[in-house]
Length: 174
Image (cartoon, rainbow, N blue to C red; front, side, top):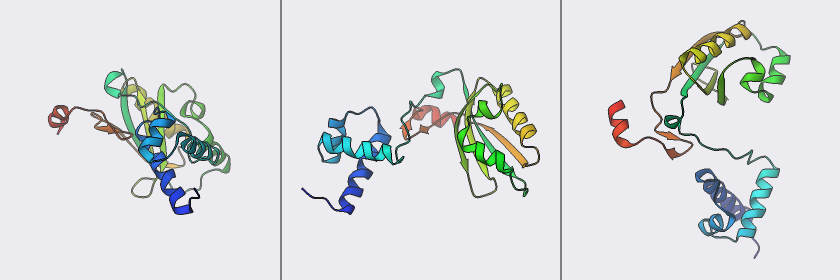
């Protein structure tokens, strides 16, 4: 059977959706949900990995089950252009490579449009480690950072599409 580009795109989208829901599904299960064979699913996944559409697979940790708190750091930049050397390093390094000795687990970092320019999410044992990270960011990037806002999440509701919190807990929070 020959498939056209629209069909191929539709199959890729369905496979990606299934992988985002649960990347531990085997090829047979994904194939059944997407209406194609395990072999076709395998070929699509291999191609998506090779062209960096799929960057990797990871575990989604329930923060309620660990001894870590979850934080969001909002950063507003100054208008000063960032040094070329720092720009080359930023996408390649983790938080601990950038600022040695920090005790956080960097999750996500985004450049954004709006009141802030950069959003980072991370976990830390407590607020003191999170504040230490913020202070080191300010020190390291002092001429580039106009404002930092640190938020501690009260409780997760959904994380990567997975429902984390029971509805009675959400009611108590709200």
